[in-house]
Image (cartoon, rainbow, N blue to C red; front, side):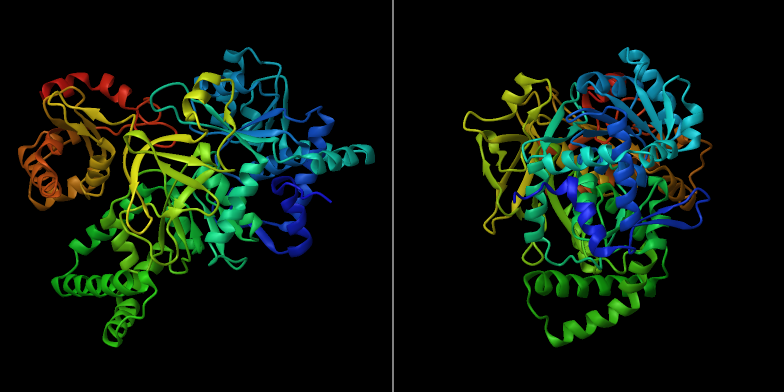
Length: 604
């Protein structure tokens, strides 16, 4: 008997194993209590949804668009589609009408699912723009349903009722499709964020996911079905999608955080053992802790500094390498862990943390050292949509801070021309949908995927990222600058929220900076600087001098040509709505350059 692909079959297998045990929890509508799905309920609703898709003439390889903030129904739709041999495609809940219309047209979608009134209204408009008003839209909730001003609409509850009425022949047809899914069949498309151009749909097969689950089993041996994961990143993001799927293959329960702005509150409530995040989460946590430390009375500040010194010695010099710390160091650490680190971890909601993967952007070594020192297992990794997420990540022992970890089992990684990181293995995409030239450009002549990122392997076999090649620019003096590294360094400062480094064909490097406004207000009040508005703050000479001094201090170790010589403070943040950020919160450099051309020119 052939091995069945994992995604169409895993929930059914796990339901037989775990039965009525809880697999998904989520904050219900009153935002005060948690509702839940057992494995059996999850399997049942996936089955009902799959039957309903069959009755609505969804065929193998048909594309289903999912446009919603995080919620359990998204996972149910995904796994129902996999059972049916269909292709679920999630788009970010923050996507514009134009982005949604582009995706619908590019993938020739058969059907759409929406959650939330904003997404419902945008979907109706997107279908009009795409000339697809005939498409059926399923609304996950009544609010979304009421916002659907269109003829072909259906409520999620009614879709499940339709599935309940399925004939025995329909049920058998779904079973046949489930068993007939092959490794080479398309599982999903992941649309890249398009920082410099049109989004591209990376085609991931079922074999990509089967392979990625197997290699994580080998690497992440510390996980078990006793772990709990908090779903924080959008389920349209390959990192969260692949991680949440992987948790389900390991029997790990998932709590879905529906509002990203409430993540701190949810963390403190749930206390998960695992959570995927982008580095910005840890940067903000680091800033918050440092702000609180700065306000402590002197004796407490001194105690915290002493604790951090011991924590770094014990966790980074010894535990990191699998070594036993000297007796005095261990005793001191246990004291500080109970008196200082433990309360910090409990307050953050990560006191039970087993593994906290972070990827998606550079993270400073200083921040990783800090959290590792206080006993929070931040696991840095590197991956792309095109590689079904993980390419490298920290091993449990012997990880190198400043790196993105070592290569995952069964993957090959090499360094090509200009230091480009290139990947080969089963997890690499089949290509970009409808884009043969982009697909050809993405692979070398001998079949390696070109990541567009540059880096090198250190003596320990750890991969160190140096720059994003397409972001790399040259000053008029002929010096190459890696802006992401500078942006990551400055972004760790408590007074800086966002940064865009500038300097293409210019004499020197400059930056557009969005300050952390609340921290800036506190500083102004402490220094008795009068202000009536944000504009007053960002144009105040004392504020500018303070930030200049901090930036100069951070850049001390950099060669002169890499240093930011001038900067401009802006009164409002870069946003997705303005087109300055992608849906994954990466900055769109061409858009920022156009929007702030006047401010940039003034620095030269």
